[in-house]
Every structure is written in C-alpha cells, then in structure tokens.
Length: 101
Image (cartoon, rainbow, N blue to C red; front, side):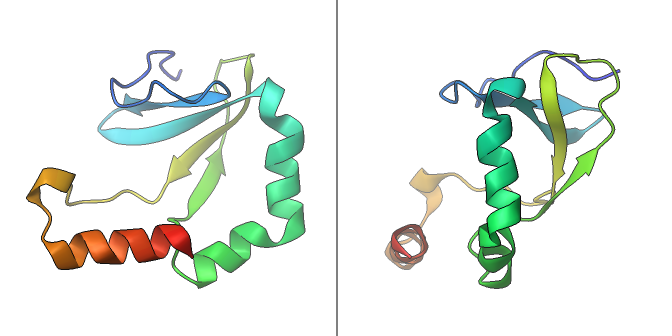
C-alpha cells in the first residue's frame, strides 16, 4: 500500500505529488492528468528528453490501493542531493542552460 502523504517538497503541482515510501521517492499522477500524461508518452517527447539527458527516467509501478491515482511512478533515484545555495556559478549556468533547452 502506498502512502497518500505528500513530501514537504511537493506542494505546487495540482495534478500530482511526490511521496516517500520505504526510502524511495514516488510520483502520484492524478486521474485528472490522464490525457496529458498519455500524450507525453505517445508523442515521443518523453523518450527524446531521456535521450538528451534533460530529465530523469521513470517506470510505472503497480497502483497498490490509491483509486484516485492514474499512475504511480518510480523515478530514477538520485543518490546525492544538493541544494541551490551550495552550487557554484558554473552549476547554476548548467542548470539554466538545461532549463532553457
């Protein structure tokens, strides 16, 4: 059974949220976002962004109890977390470049 509890870092998206379970972060995708989610996958944009290393990959996992979820995603887990206030100018520049691409 997955948690319905949002992680504190996940507060702006009206169509989903991030939650933590057993030391892993998951993404809840609300049923209201079904059309957009399906379009992302069918359009080829998701694969293109992965190939260009502009986003992290994810896999769909079994929805073990949340009937409001369209999908539960398990993103590639990032083992080392940094915060923007720790970044050098070069790291900020790289982040901005990826964002603009």
